[in-house]
Image (cartoon, rainbow, N blue to C red; front, side):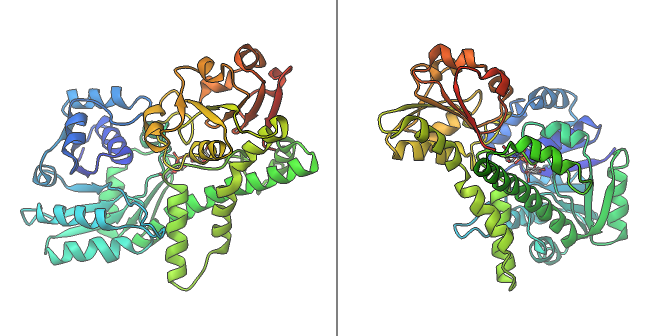
Length: 427
Ligand code: UGA
């Protein structure tokens, strides 16, 4: 079992820290946000992630996870240190490496002795960042280090499960000694491990998110075409999946992808590629398709109701997907704004994201329940795939709505149970 340090207690850092501690390692975590650190030390998870709080409390109680106030207290006892800080977008879409730079500097300054330690970048960074940002900082601090990149593939809402039972591990290393250290750390993992160079590991992360985002935009484009042809998308997908080269997962059409990663990472890749002299036009199109896809949920309401001015529209699902309270890039934001631009009143409901959403779009009325949101509504858009929404039937909509016009923006409702309402979905 190893002594690990973890810098950054956001969704990725905290989940990773808890998972390592649950596997028996001794983890010391640190964050520059003192309030967040104190909250975590008390056993509270500052965001919604199923199962994480119980697991956090357990490892805190066992003292396998400790939250340190000072960087020195995390660095000194550790042999491997993970950098899990954010890489937010700048206004032009490029990646801001400021937080990573600051964290690396603080870590180098806290080294304190001549012991060799391994620094692992887990933050999502563009290819070349670890070598151009982190390496020079460690070199100029004259500390003996090994350097690695270990991208995360955690899905919000299933993050702990993904961290405990990964389906792949990618390790970018600066040499064979680092590879040995990290292989040893991950020796109990029952999944393929790819060991490669630092910048290749960084590229794998970006390529994965670019590919997944492209799949969603392709699904949306195909579904939009199916709508034009009067063809059922599900059957087309079944046919596609008969081709052994086409994996049908992640091809669910709807109102587009949201979340903190796909849009940010694809934007960053486009900006970085263009700077290097290659303009990734397909990726530009992936974002363009996504940016306008939400309008496909509004069009059926207008077809059914005419002008939306003065209409009351229920918006079910405010988070960017079910299972999270994260509203970053949530498609509920452009949907709500567009509905209001067209004169509608929007009543939103979400099992976890109401507070977060109210900060972004304060004009939306918030309901305390699905029933309250639907009451008197002329139309309803379902935006996030919470299980509680997937159980709704025509009866639920007919009970309260003034006009039962429903658009399933995530294809989660059972169409066979929608008799008696005016039901639409994309594709
Ligand atoms: C995504 C990736 O799935 C993770 O592997 C990755 O680690 C993470 O980003 C990251 O880079 O940190 P996440 O943002 O949690 O994870 O969300 P996803 O479950 O991938 O969904 C993203 C968006 O795409 C959601 O709005 C979802 O509703 C939408 N989506 C997904 C579709 O519209 N159709 C699909 O078939 C799948």
